[in-house]
Length: 144
Image 1 (cartoon, helix red, strand yellow):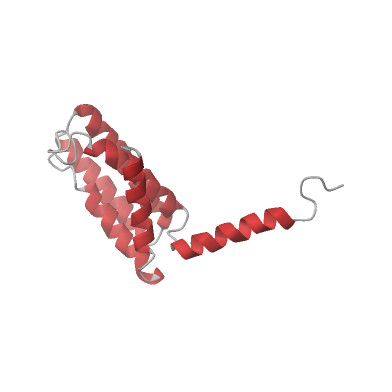
Image 2 (cartoon, one colour):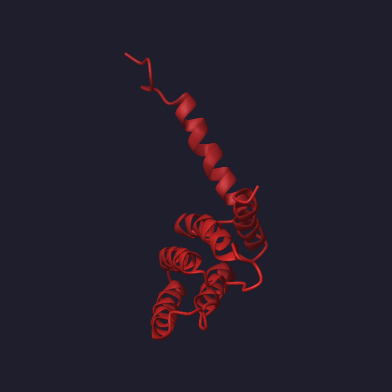
């Protein structure tokens, strides 16, 4: 159950973003990942926390124009989550495994961003179109 909840949170994040108009979806996500970059500012790695926040800010800024950069920033945050979990300085001081949960959730969000941050209906239509094409393609498996 510990793994399932963070995955569901990541999926819910992507689904709720579907409610935003496409024109606003990427800028909102750039701001969200910038905020995530500052979550550990007093997390125990001293000046490295500032360096990480600066790197995340740069990635988030680039994310204003590119879903790929937002996805990269979420993956950067995943690595930071894992370091903090290993170090024993969780993102939520009252929840010992919160950084590990975040490290499970963040890649789910990153994959959605790297796929273009499309709405759930858009992703569904794309998936149905691709799978339907495989079943009916001439020259598929068994064609001579």
